[in-house]
Image (cartoon, rainbow, N blue to C red; front, side, top):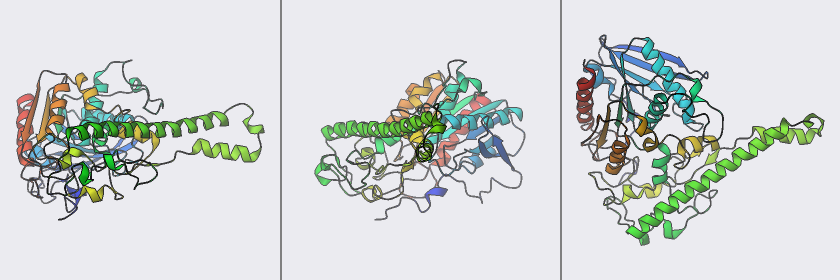
Length: 423
């Protein structure tokens, strides 16, 4: 059995450049954007003819400039705006609060271009990012955030955050930190040892109910409950490590700027300056361990057994690739911690009052039916709807790389857009 689910996971979100709908009549305009803090991002605006409505895509690190939804949206008469963040293709340093300034730069550009209706479509990690943005944009000063989870000052009340007119979650999870807390392997005993393991919590231990895919594992309710509690405890442990690094750096910086520092011996000053600059990267081992991806009876759906990228997560769990594998203390707290990150759909969705649509694929191995329902329930507006269509996380038919599900999802999105914004 093959290990990787897709031949090229990096291309899964992209449309085919030979798509006949993207012919010469579609104007493709590259855009360079600068956020209020000087952060640089980029985008491509697609438009066949003048329209009042533009549909936006963005993700914390994935390339959204060729999202597979774009041809269908442009063909239906809408403009499409695929934006890449300042952390494109590398989210090691990703601070979600700074990402909001990138989103705002795109929103200001689109309003200046004269678009009357701006709709955010958050795919995968883009859902929690856009929910975070729309929630902050919907708040009046002084109610917005003024600091990151690491304690760095970032007063969003001082920035223009144009609110969108519609919000769509397409195969979107509840937050990068929250999804990681479901995926992280709690059997890790020593954060410095990738092979350390508590056998009683090992999800790949046959004694705990594991079976090699394509068989479904079967975990006892007691194990699931204990496992989830241990996952939360591991995230809390990593939070404490991240905060300790940040506190050590802050103490060193205070020492450098304290009166009398210049009179101290040169060697002491040199070491203090190095400590003040140090922001050591963190390696988070083993994040391919969501029980729902292994046991098909947990939050059942039409998915096959295996994680988002792997049919053999018992192997890939130990490999060098994986969510949050290399991060910084500040990025961990802002993006990957399910306990500290502000980018939680359930935290932000109550502030989202604009028309909203949640689109879920019934064979998704990363976002499960209960996740989609929780997102819908949390949304604060009255005009909200959940639809489920056949497909895996990228709109492929389950177990294939044939994009048969995406057209079903896009038909739903286009119909929803036309009902609310015309065109």
